[in-house]
Image (cartoon, rainbow, N blue to C red; front, side):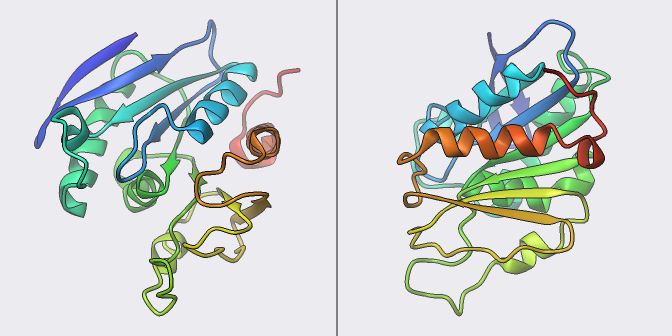
Amino acid sequence: MVLDIDTPHGPAKAHLHLVETPAAALVLGHGAGGGVGAPDLVTATEAARSLGISVALVEQPYRVAGRRSPAPAHQLDAAWTAVVERLLADELQGLPLVAGGRSLGARVACRTVEATGALAVLCLAFPLHPPGRPEKSRLSELDAVSVPTLVVQGARDPFGMPPPGPRRTVVGVAGDHGLKSDRRAVADAVRTWLLDSSRLQLERKE
């Protein structure tokens, strides 16, 4: 099911992958130049649904409009928040929210935790810094997140490897920024983290 959702910066799309009697909702955003069909987003969706978690993959307005260059951060954040609010008011109503995304989408999810009320954040290939520019660190965006966070990162990611933190788990897997080399490892990391009831307070499902 695909929904068209109005935002302050144009229409977005939400690709819904719902399950019966869901335990929670996982809402994920895409990378800067990619879409919701990225391998790691598909893998995370399958892992979450296998645990009884409904998933929504959000297409930002700039991608819906056919542009590849991302909108400014404040526009991305506002559009994302509008989509999440709309989903939580209807299709995902009453469900504990895990927010996240890959690369740029992960940054958006981190910056908007308070606005969306997410209980946890899933970051796939978080772009810690531009390739070859470690001095341009974006670690502050991760450090500002006060809820449990999982970062799944390619061991050869040119965007860097974030450090673990008090509420941040970092799992390194084979591959680079695309997280395509070992999709099973990505799935295992996501499943293990989502199953941790001490983090997400979700009922364990076999």
